[in-house]
Image 1: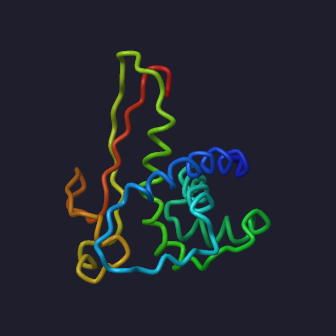
Image 2: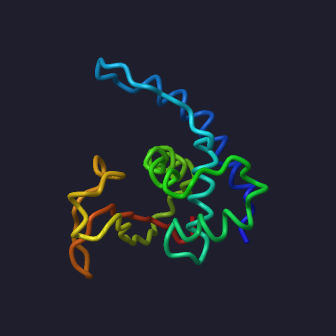
Image 3: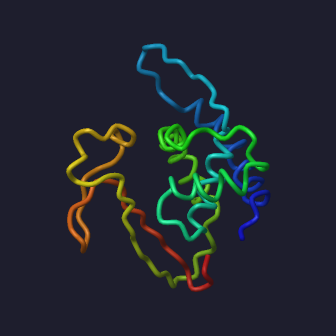
Length: 160
């Protein structure tokens, strides 16, 4: 089992440096928008998503309802409902990419690449899907068309 505290400390260190710098760089559209804080911090959301990727669960919802809500309730006191967590998860995309980029290994000249798809919804539900609508795109892989993201991963010969 992955250590929640170690992952959280690692992610929180990156968030404390990245988020203030990112907020300074963002452009505004001129209209005022509410920036209401969630009960669950961005570092906690990233920790949950990272631990999910190390788990044996196929969907975030199943992981959230079964494993996290029942077994890790004492670690996260202010857990949101599963639907609210999924609605807020796109907020964690850019910080997660920066966190991954901060952890890249040394370049040795030998690299292995792979890609996988993160399917957001079935093709029939694309027009009614709202959660990742601004950032998800239609794509094609060996299994056919999908709506979601493509994750590309590069690993050097040391496994970094």
